[in-house]
View 1 (cartoon, rainbow, N blue to C red):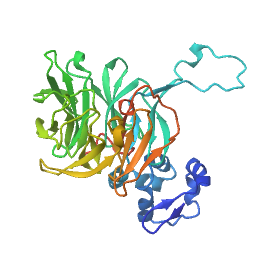
View 2 (spheres, rainbow, N blue to C red):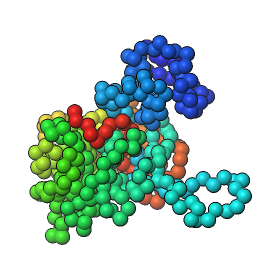
View 3 (cartoon, helix red, strand yellow):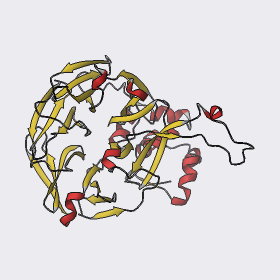
View 4 (cartoon, rainbow, N blue to C red):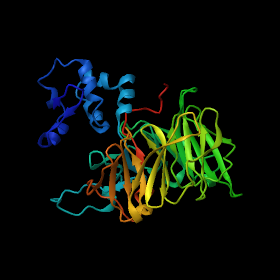
Length: 386
């Protein structure tokens, strides 16, 4: 690894796999590297690499597991996509096995894995889940995922990298366990909270909220406008945001997890099909289809106003493009068209490039935004208190 003066790093492609397989080899001849220099290098590395590096030596373990490192690394972690369905993997049977193994001989050896797509590094990877019963991811925030166990008997809030988790009740009423879930952090109570939106028997939105500290659901007044509970909530600044269910509306709904009240807010334009709310560089963004272009708007903090970031002219095919996610720094946005081809648009220079391959395998039966949700691989724990 070559350290750069600005705190960056570079890897040669030929040595990449060798260094990841043997992280000790990277600094074996540099025992006098200061903690400050190691800190600057480590926070720039992906979470799946950091989780391995912490076991190289006690010094590295102590450095990586400090609260300041976890916070700084989370602030630099870029956006990836995590599959909403965990993959069931069969055990590997050696090709030279003298006989076929019967089903009862491999029961208990199957595994479930989290599957990630990293558009920034153009690759995919997977991580084994420590909980076999985990099947269906409903929300992601701060590197934590909220997922159902089989038969939806309970929820699990978990960090896929560290595998630390907590079991939670599924819902106040089991018949309403479906719907949209969102996770946010309450800075006042110093704990994570989960909001659950669902459809009441009356046809209106019902809502409930749970603090990770109490592990109890509390019913709350739902939003005045009907929400599409099949969409993923966008979590930003202690609030969760959803678009209204009906196309043609120019409102969206937000709830602040501190005061636990829903409010309706204006969009810069009426919602069209395939429009999305996105986290764009830490700001709430709205990507809308207007004739032959996509318009990207950014919400002004503590204001009802929006600023138009850019317009992307895509011709007559613009209506088929779906915004998937934005990079953490807000410089790029991933789009998918109806042929399941992926493009990355750079906001600064206006260049849009097609991504031909990111490795791995995934289903193309459904749209990517129905299979994957934005996620960040961090070391953050659900026990976070600041």
